[in-house]
Length: 311
Length: 242
View 1 (cartoon, rainbow over the protein chains, first blue to last red):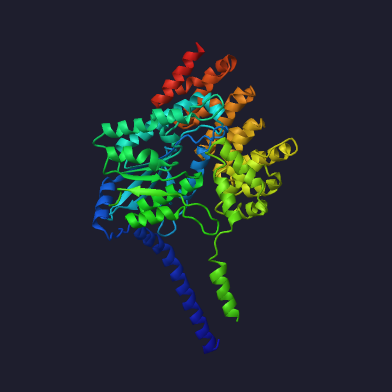
View 2: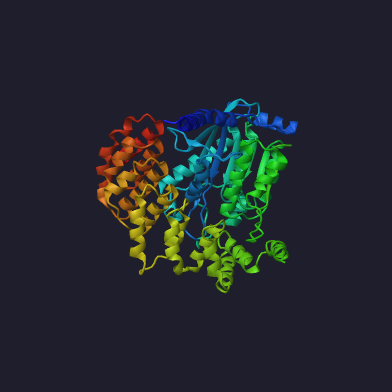
């Protein structure tokens, strides 16, 4: 073998060795870098915002409840919250793209409705986030559900979990019907003979919000810091009575009617902003970005409003 | 010259206002549900009168406004979209494509759609949201699946599929009086999650007296279940037998 070809073979060996080293170190170091990214402490430009997040993340385990109300389409028989929950969960169970928070969750073993992941808290210490995602309906047909005793059981279970969350959870989001101020609602609606929802009755009796307010009033030691209503005109129906009662609470509401997919997007955006610990201007920007008017399609902006969370 | 032309396109082409037609179909689509019947009727009339609506809907079916496009297709019963919807439904994560297809079913396409649904409901490659919708649709279509298929889904790794299969079982036992499905309740009561067991126990409470008597043999395992709520509803079912 000539010296020239020996040198070429040596160079090839060195190059191959180098490539193997790069390959091996990539696989060994990748999880370490990922873990570092996962547990890197967020930086805060605003000390008040940092304090708010320290309060929100003051427990080792953060309890977030996402409760889908009974999403009937009366006078049609269709009920959609089972499908909406499936659609909403999809990105949550997917891998995270850098900078996103509403992702990377895994279903808990032994609890089908609980989804968990670990993040770094505002102090850099790891926190476990437990996301309980509940749906109200048991089937897609309101006529069937009304006659199904399992529907009654499930509606009651979901209602209880929502109300319990107001006292013991850190964050509660409701995605459902506002029922003209009579919501939140987890059961088949009160309907008239023609199949239309009895909105007047909901508006006068206000069963859902009354119950919510009584729970908030009774629980002075409540741990809840943020309440979100991803439902039609929830600012109008729910903001004032809640803020009159609980001044310090963070509240996310919709100023106008909201289409279901916009409500889902907004809820994802709010969760993501919360888990990546965004302060108020960024939080609002992310929220609105989820459903901002698209100049090409001309879709209307969903007026989403957040108050009191981070300032 | 070319640069000026490109600049012109960039400034006036991309920054132009939305076309009123596209904007208006979207705003009409938004009021098809959630509003009054009169609002819906007026929106449908305006949508029907819109020129080139179908081409706008076609271009949106895979985009951000796909759910609004589906609402319009359903409300207007645009059956020429059926092939596209069946194709796109395969990747649908929500089940809403199947709901739109359901709204188009008539005597001419019922068999074809049912055949597609039956083949996809067992396909584990399908997103689970879609498989839930497929179970719901097959129940509505009175399409009887073999007990083996339902049994497999009752043991699917995804809890939502298991619950949908049990909901289908409810249809088969209450509406079709199909006793072949009855033994599957035993499987659920032995191996299901607590919630699934309770779903099965409520179903047993709804059965006809003859089926209830047969199902009482399945209650032996849940009488001593570790979950108190399962035990409670199990004993309630046993009380009903007496």
